[in-house]
Length: 114
Length: 136
Image (cartoon, rainbow over the protein chains, first blue to last red):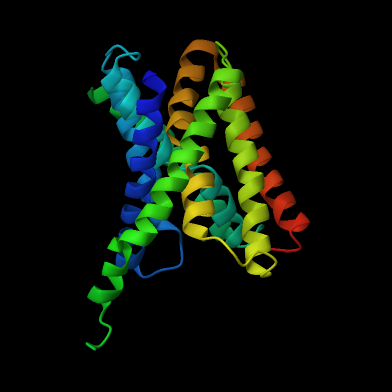
């Protein structure tokens, strides 16, 4: 039953991803996919924070928040947007490296500051 | 009718119908992700996350190609691409698992997880696009 919370909050996460990544992308006015970068790094930081806090990962609040971050962040869009930049281009390589290292760094910072 | 300014363009995001499509897609994508997580539950190597991320990348590649070639015309990309397939995969868990693997299992399992997820994800997304008739 608790998984229903994770699903509902995952849906909310998807809506937040749509709004936040859209607004960031419009602000930047550049075709580099910064909207997806923004939501993924924020989401990785927030999950690092949650996991590092030592809170009970099976409590309803934490299950809901983890579900939200699952819906808020996206892996498939990262892959497809990277290919869209040109499979062997410098920009594609940049999108891979910045997201990968940024995600690990963001999660680690969340973990440490919690 | 007022002229379209950047501000009115931004407000398009807040229209209720697109938001409902994303929300409903996100509901289905999240349910599927949690279903896969229950089936592939494992200690140690994050098999379930790898499965959803690879499957989701393949399906998104395929969907984008079919949509771009107008083979698929019906249905909203907000529902399928942003909602269902965006929510089915996850980046936050991927990042946190990389740190966990590093502290518990060492650098080789980090490398294995990065290679299978990222090179695997790019390969299957490309495969999906090719099957859909697109050559990026």
